[in-house]
Length: 215
Image 1 (cartoon, rainbow, N blue to C red):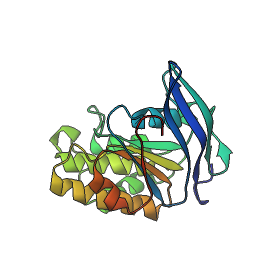
Image 2: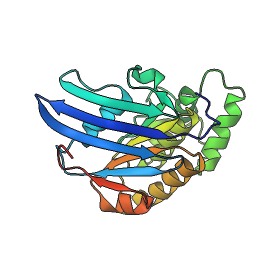
Image 3: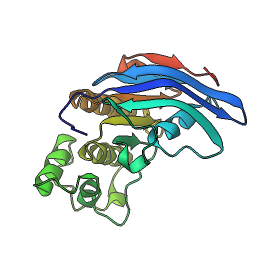
Image 4: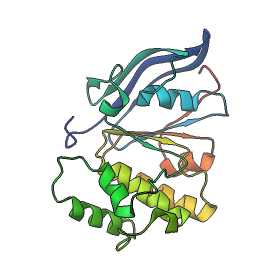
């Protein structure tokens, strides 16, 4: 997909069932730079929906509906070909790679001037000069920033955020919210945020859908 074109994420008549029971039903469109927030208690189907969109829904679930990204139907594509980036509760940095190595992992292989892109990304989040650091030496907030930049360097066409701020303390949580959503908006990426924290939804100032298991 052309990452220079405006991106949109369409969830067309999505229904996910387990043992015949309806877990999630959703029909929505997320435009370029917009974030749709899904809220609900544990068991309401939030993570199940993300797994379906990302392409790794367990076979025990039955799903219908279409996922359309930038005009392309990606419903049947394998996860690695969907063009969707993921940000989780844990940064999931590779412990055997340096900070720069983690960022390099996210870069498309065809990209030129890789070292320059990495240096610019680190400077962009206040980590200039941290390229050779061991991820184990970073604070929780620093790890979260590296994970965010690794995601953005991979040039996704849409982003799924699964409780990405829940393990940070209050001050860092506010900082990471501002950082993440400002970068996603600037990149024009449609994003889907799953959270149980009302402050996350307030920070986005976008549409919010409450899930309660089936709706």
